[in-house]
Image (tube, rainbow, N blue to C red; front, side, top):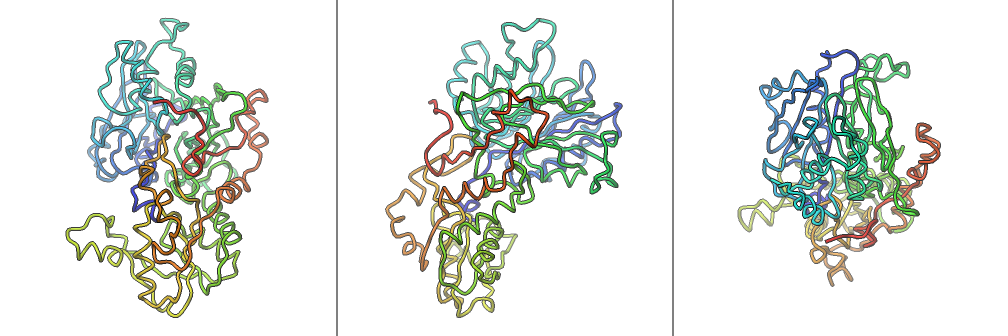
Length: 510
């Protein structure tokens, strides 16, 4: 819950759709794209954009962008102008680089020597400053402060060995991946195909789904001939709402071509020798929706395992286990299962109150938590409570909750945090406060229980988190037989814990 209050957020979500079979399609591509974005709304709420194409030669593009939530940005009238698309990509944004205004809204569309391309990007380039200088030295102007426009211009640049009359998009994408190692998941739309790309470290997620008839959505009998379209998304949670079945992940470093004919893996760009993948571990902790699947496992299940591991590492004498609604609920259930203590609700959340920093005066500011939560007194009065949270970032959110519970009758409140302390900023697409703002780097952290008013505070260790995440990951080499043996090094398991340990997967450039 404190991630939300501290303004920590994922940079964005990307989604794409290609209708299968004959075109013009009967599949409502614009509606599929809109519903896909709605399911990814938790990844960004600042702006949203959709670009569709009829896939002709030359193609006709239709674009609509807007500020705010998807439901605000896309009116029925706006969707009408997108209705003739046979394929399209879209994006919902939470800015970590670039200011929040419409000109930074994606997808970006640019003209190239061979026609228009549209690009949607999730992540943040670790060497963006150097790349911007390089692009400008080639005489290319940049109209926004977004990394995504920079990526688009790099893709538009013609590689030296390319034939003048036929663009080699695999070569162009590989050239981009050579220029910048991480962090990005990309969708590139050109004419009648979408290229789905994940950086060699796999830092940001990307997966593929297959649109099937609703009657076959929950059956195992849907064959390739039943495919109505292909979708690609930051998270698999978007598939169910648009009638798609999970197909597979895009592997780290993989370039996948998605067309009306199907899905084809074109290449896998390797990491430097010995480097492990670096999938962001906080996708599991907080950012992803609980029903999403990463690396063959559901996020909800991983969060439960984190709670069980937390109970092993940080037991306490208490009567009940509860949570700050609602992202930490799976971890609280896991803690309760492992500890043998009953799980109960102690707080009722008012879903219609905004963040507590939006307060007009001192009195209302002091009532901030009471406005957002109601105490379910009958459930815990006279009892010792273990309260599970997903984080303590600055420490200014959990303290009034503890005070609320104690004033409502809890005899003790023990805080258990289902992730390790965040000590370092992220430079790969997550908006984390400065190092100085993080409570784990302040003198108060030495007595954090006293600082926030708890009877005790303990965090999950980094080793415990990594163990909980990797416990359920089966060998990706055995799972995906489509990847050749020469590329199986790309399926090794590894996670980025830089915000916890300060060990970044690549050398940072400034």
